[in-house]
Length: 401
Ligand SMILES: Nc1ncnc2c1ncn2[C@@H]1O[C@H](COP(=O)(O)OP(=O)(O)OP(=O)(O)O)[C@@H](O)[C@H]1O
Ligand SMILES: CC(=O)N[C@H]1[C@@H]2OC[C@@H](O2)[C@@H](O)[C@@H]1O[C@H](C)C(=O)O
Image (cartoon, rainbow, N blue to C red):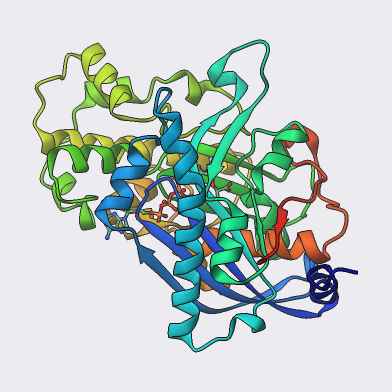
């Protein structure tokens, strides 16, 4: 047996593993690195988040990604070059981080790498008969594994598409295993660039569980801030939105996308929700001359309205449900306030810290769970094709040399 395969075989049999989960999301803010000690597998998964950091991307990184990010037309040579470059960069970031944490690379079982999504296009969106669903994450795992010197499992989304899904959200595969509770119905709400939720009934009945994207998130707000308030990257603590007034006509136009009329589960991205989407809504509502503060106030309420609508759809037939939020959106006080105000059944939105997971680390932890399942998991007994949850094992293995 090849020594790499033997080491992986031994890792797979361990009751307790050290797995580093990596997530680089649609906000392009940085690489989230979560050092997880994972015990067990399946419904018996237990996680200790031993360390977490976000390594911020510098302006050069952001500029390079933005040249291809969510763009239908871009320089194919640049994409080809970015693929290994990001892999190596992420590998070096992990190696530096381990040094800072005083941890030897030999002690890590595997890295679980999401990569950087640069394009997401479910069939519903591209509407080309001859193609199915598609999604593309770059930052190749071979390069990451070599740079970090650690076996890496990556490219998790393709198997989901191969099995008939849209490649996202994968959150349900971790949420169901780790956050299902027989005490309460739960919604796990993540608000990054794109917002998504997972519904977890306390019965744990697989036919009711689902995960779906909702819409934006922070993506349009961030793009607007970066365009009109550079060098700001986002509206910190909603200072700008709080100084503006909501414009009702623009809000209604923003809430009118065909995407919002589709049933769950569905996926989307900045390919749809971007500044062109805003410009179109402004044109339709005759609000092109609105000042930047009012636009931001309206965009914040737009995200909150659609998030609240999605929560309300889940809670409609239930007397009580607990919502646990994660992702950068939880730090936006105005967004959070608007969501609660638009959910009549909710007094508060909690965050995943109460369930033992740092809300900023939640998506990186998800990929660590997926890698653990890839190595040691079994059948997904909650598989349910109608809800986009296939019985699959996700991830591809890259060795360090
Ligand atoms: N203090 C704050 N005030 C307002 N917004 C904030 C604050 N902190 C973070 N954010 C928002 O959160 C975003 C980052 O969120 P996060 O890191 O969860 O996104 P992501 O993981 O890249 O996205 P996705 O989950 O869609 O892939 C920032 O770009 C910003 O919009
Ligand atoms: C294609 C892609 O990268 N999608 C991301 C993005 O960020 C949030 C939302 O859109 C979600 O669908 C997904 O990520 C999370 C981790 C998921 O798959 O659950």
